[in-house]
Amino acid sequence: MKQARGTRGAIETVLGLISRPALLIDRGGRIRLANVSGARLLGRDRAHIQGALQQAARGDRSERAWRLTPVGGAPLTSGFIAVLDPVDERAPAVAVAVPRRGVAAERWQLTTRQAAVLELVAAGATNATIAEALGIKQRTVEFHLSVIFDKAGVDNRATLIAKLLTP
Figure 1 (cartoon, rainbow, N blue to C red):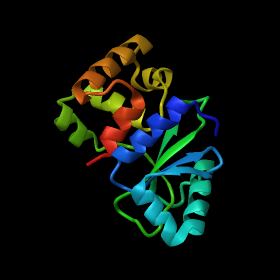
Figure 2: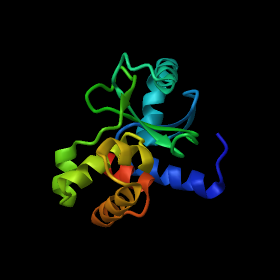
Figure 3: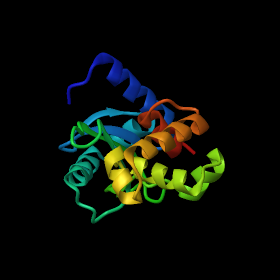
Figure 4: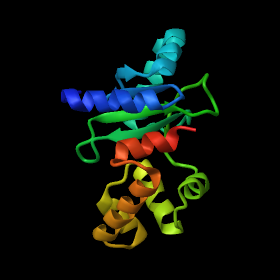
């Protein structure tokens, strides 16, 4: 996965903010970076984790231990940030990143619509996809994202997702 120096630094920062085991993987599921917790987990059973991440990157949803967040945005997704779900640290697999809507809505005092936008952003949806799913215009999605960024104290999607996934 080719990345500019600044992009790699930003991703390392995001991974460092996540307390759960978190890894940057490419579209094929190959591990490119890991936070401290992720590195510890890899030390225990790298082969199993690598296999589960490759399945996850292919879209196999038979297991649900990893939360994947696209990096780069579809259709230009260059990979994923994979965060181990707190439910099962022993059996890594895949789960789509879906925030606990009520927790985020309460924490950042989001409206119902803002929480719905946040949920779709965390699942990797583009502004166009969010607009279509919610029956609103892309400009309205952009407005909601701007407000969400302000309330969460962030200035981009990657930092928003990292903050969302950090307890």
